Length: 296
Image 1 (spheres, one colour):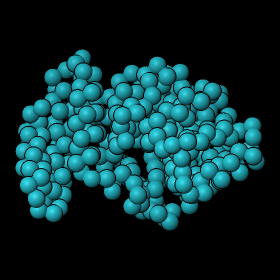
Image 2 (cartoon, rainbow, N blue to C red):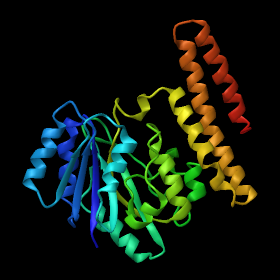
Image 3 (cartoon, rainbow, N blue to C red):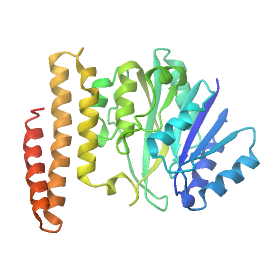
């Protein structure tokens, strides 16, 4: 069984060595490590090139000549995969040593499953562990998890990360939506889990870095726009669900949209007073009320 690992890189010079070393240090070696750099302007490309020279039969580097965004960068990496299974890592995160081994074993034990995921640590900018995704005893869904994924009904409202996936199955579903620069992973997991079954490995196998340059710094209005787009796009996938499942997805997604609408209204209120700011505030307050009632 050949495992491909995709690493995406963009101006993460201070973390990239840790990310690459965490893959090289796996208890079972991957068949290939594909690194796609999205036109970094720091020293990231030099780091990648040095590793490619040291491991010419293992590391495959690609360098964008212009910044294309995370969705295109991830898809570029996936298009280069030659393995049976694939997983991925952002250039500021880290795998723990048994990540590939444990998740592959989980997939092989359940022949119906084509996605394996596991628990993960949250770390801060300097790499100190600051929390855990699924706390002890907190159930994580397995099997047909499409409804739970669409509703984001997972620990802390966050979905699984760095999943190991049957590559041929992923290709049939299709890769990332390149029109998205926020929540592209949420959209991808909605589509993946509609078609594929999931198995959960109850071990802490990844470290996910949270810092000020991440998604949390994006404006609430942009988050709301992305969420609205993802819901409209994927709503037809709900058609074959029963009424209770549809209501549950609608209610949970509505709560997320109301939350982002409230944050967007607050941002508009705090911005410089102008007619446009007032209009923005009114718009997002109306959207908040609408989504609280899940009337969409």
